[in-house]
Length: 297
Ligand code: IPE
Ligand code: IPE
Ligand code: MG
Ligand code: MG
Ligand code: MG
Image 1 (cartoon, rainbow, N blue to C red):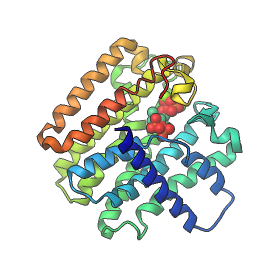
Image 2: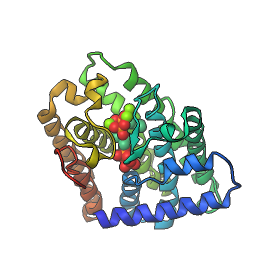
Image 3: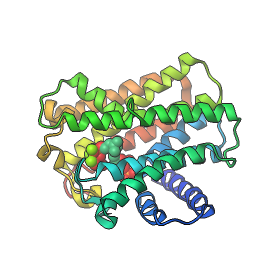
Image 4: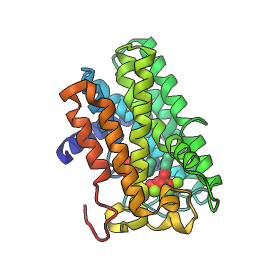
């Protein structure tokens, strides 16, 4: 699993490096690269490649689409760490972008990474019809805006220090994290022009996978260490974040996550042995072991 993830990370970084190199230089490119090329796991790209292989999409296209996703993901992390949001000073084992370059530069570098995703998806190096590209851009935009990342982040912040129901916490986590995973799950079906019904099914599957990922991240924050996570931990409690852990406790949240994996695996059963890689990724997400104190990765 780690080898496959490393290869995807390497290929994605290579595409992004070349893409950036071909553009004209600007002052913002240094903070953008700082936020983008910093040991991110590329788990969203892995999900995209896993689902893409079920639908026999060529690897190169998946890497390009994954690169766009990683730009949006990195932008969301730069903004997530800002003082007006989670106020975090360490990200991926180094100072957060605003600590290194200042707040206004971090905001603008984040904005530029967000829009770079659309440049990538509309670029000629992605060898797909214009109609398909428009459909991909439409979906990724929806995943990033008020119905996705931005909307979810809004809820995350407005729920701080409040007692929030399980249903609303799940809705918030699906928006802030799940929707981008949904995009990764439906992009291959958009390319293959599958039915609305099937796209809907994969959209929900992605929401569940993203929820699982966010729950695992919350578990890491609750019990993991900075050295293993590459970011400060124990912060959700201090900030009064509404998480499933705050509602159900650590142990019951692990149970919740295990049930979620079962649910996801049942959903993908009908696609047979081609889902082996995806199941492996799901196990990896929950068993990153980073919520066990002092575990090194
Ligand atoms: C962290 O995402 C933020 C969440 C949505 C939970 P990742 O854990 O995927 O971050 P990187 O890219 O590997 O640093
Ligand atoms: C971030 O969630 C979700 C995003 C959409 C960026 P967190 O705030 O839990 O992510 P970390 O723990 O700072 O990486
Ligand atoms: Mg946050
Ligand atoms: Mg945060
Ligand atoms: Mg977190």
